[in-house]
Image 1: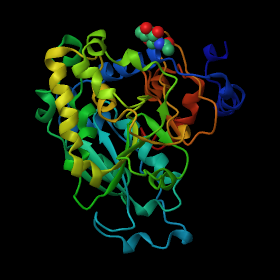
Image 2: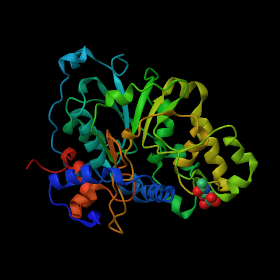
Image 3: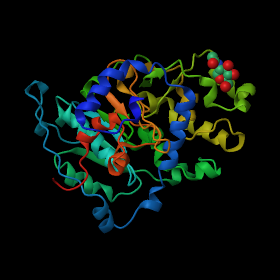
Image 4: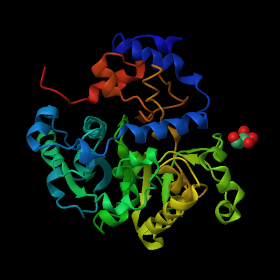
Length: 367
Ligand SMILES: *[C@@H]1O[C@H](CO)[C@@H](O)[C@H](O)[C@H]1NC(C)=O
């Protein structure tokens, strides 16, 4: 298998992309489930990992990114846009935590680099550790952003207390609270996980039509949807009845375009919380933050092209396996799953596609 191959330079990886990309037809749901489980395992609670600002600085030193300026076609120069409510802004929300910081910084870097109008992007960072703001300032001195403190207590009572889920990072659930957290003037947001890079202009994703829907995501209708919920869930009509009249399909919550006006109006946060509340006593699913989103939105989403979430690239570090791209064009590469490209870079056990993440990495001192 080509995948066992060790990394040997950017060009070999780029060739592998070209040669192998049509080979992975489907993404087995069992794999998808395992990926998300491990995702949550890996994220240590940041209150455990957080340290003093001094040692944080020691652990996280990032190079300053280049300054990204608007192209002439942009209709506005960066200086005209002030504040978070300016109508030409495009809004992106990302979590920042100690464990995934390197990934979040690379994600921001990739977005700026591929954007025609980078100065029109406003970043909304969700944190449980406010120290991280300094690192963003020093890495992207020109960046338009705001940091929002997400109180872990908001979800602590809603996360069931099984041993596995006790390990779960509350920040995984922050995406459910964007409508409350973000400024009321923000009407639409692109939510992105921290383990991805965007290799296309995010304005294209941002401007996707959602029609009458509240969220837009790439759907995966070939995945066996049954497996995302327990037998108990399916046998109890009080629960499984929620999917009556819908054609529910799996989707990944790591890339979502959200209409915050509709979300606020309908009160989707509460709907998701209601399922989390049921889960505490009924055990209707095994995973953490994904199933409540599926319960509320599956079969009721605006379809976004699959190019915007080429997920599963994390593969599995323990088995040393690497993942391939799904066929078709690629606008966003997502290292969901257990393995993260920054860990593999450090351990020098790269998967071929990790070479596509590395150019956005700003970690470490200038060479
Ligand atoms: C989906 O998975 C369930 C449970 O594992 C199984 O019973 C069912 O036959 C599967 N459906 C398809 C279409 O593969």
